[in-house]
Image 1 (cartoon, rainbow, N blue to C red):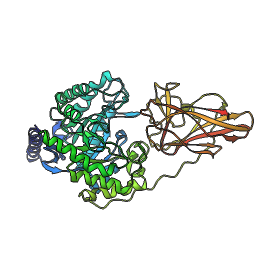
Image 2: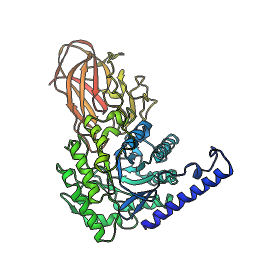
Image 3: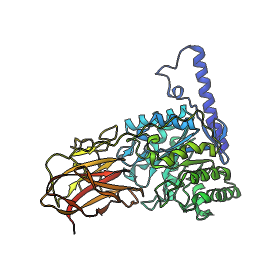
Image 4: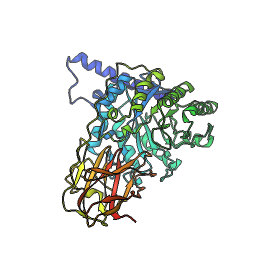
Length: 508
């Protein structure tokens, strides 16, 4: 099966190349804008599968990549930086939080389609493969439209040779899991749109390989059996404290099981661990050790998982990395034998924190519920201004307002890294007060800071992560003093947060 797949893609590339040469010989000019899509999109980076390995343009290749989930706001400078360092893979989501490429019916929006094709083509020119996670278990549209989303994505990308697909990110996630039969039907839909598609479906830790390194043979077979027939295995391994020490052992166990059953496939590790998540905060050496062990044990691809690619509408990946992540990004290629193609360029200077003006407008009353999207001022750092999914909501501050069916007013406000929202407050008498907030995040390292008249009164209020972006929870801040009069309350999110509402109350 894999030999046929490679042959088909190579034959297609050769035919396209022959057509291009014929055209060039008949007319000494560039391909005109009205040329056929096949001629305009001749693939430079042709991905294939040969046994347990990926190939690029027919040559065996280990894929080393980075999480780049918020791909609707991709940056060419990021692709340049990754290419320069020797990376040849990025992993994107088509339905990432509020920044979906799809509309409410599971169809690619015209803007989403254009941005997706531009990204894939830009990656192709740089020798980069794009892993496209089409669906997840917490969709922005009804599951009635999942087949449409598969058809739309695969149809748009069928002529791009530098793409592989993850049908559903962590299909068995406890938050509304898909069934194996369900993803099997999705695979059938994908193949009908792109018979040559290279694909798999990712699963949660302990699904294919249990801790410490025990293969779940029945689940592996389910991934292989028709109609799913995964061409790539994409296990998300157990996130244990010793994860980087177990990577090689886990890959070897899975690989040996596949070999013994005559079902060799590429093993692709998409997201072993990331900093500030699942109780882990790996350092540089852990990431390098894991990537090196994965390759030595026979894995075909490995992703450096980081949340620096989670909010690309705010700033590029290269600016969002912390110092440890930057060191990892610079050193990983050498650790797995992929030397950079050119010397890395320095990271751009971090933008200065915005000045916080007092919030204006009619003050909110103590005890009243304040909808987060009704902020009267905001420290907006996104270059796109109000980039939320409800740009028609009457808020002139530039705050990102999004539609939200799980929220009190049908909307929420998203604060990106370092942003804040301001609310004028009428305080009837001096005293001790608390702030109650309804918020959500899925990351373990998120906090909130509260300021009054520009001065912090609560620092680093922890926000426990939820299982999905509908898993809102209410928090209560520590008590702090407020003088009587009109005050300016700011809610700041050092590393990002989604707010539903807040309420200021006298301290109990």
